[in-house]
Image (cartoon, rainbow, N blue to C red; front, top):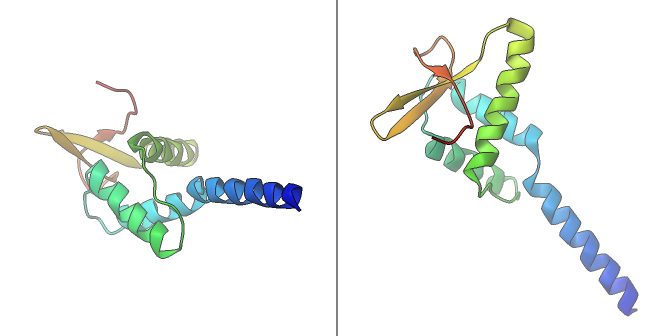
Length: 114
């Protein structure tokens, strides 16, 4: 019986970990957010993604790098099809904005730390 409980516990941990890594769901949520034409800071976008994930009983994203990697992946997909970047960023003061290309005059998002 102890083995069964241990195996079940490992399965539960694996299932919980998988919930946080659902890129497709985050991609859909990011697309919906930016598709409104509203500009988001990375923090605002992450908060919106987390709210939507939690409403679906999924775990929130804790790392800012995860959101930036999602955006870069989305940009690479967009670039392969349209030969331009879809999601762009713009620095403003100490922060910045993210939006779909054509809705603002911004530059492509970079995950490099500066």
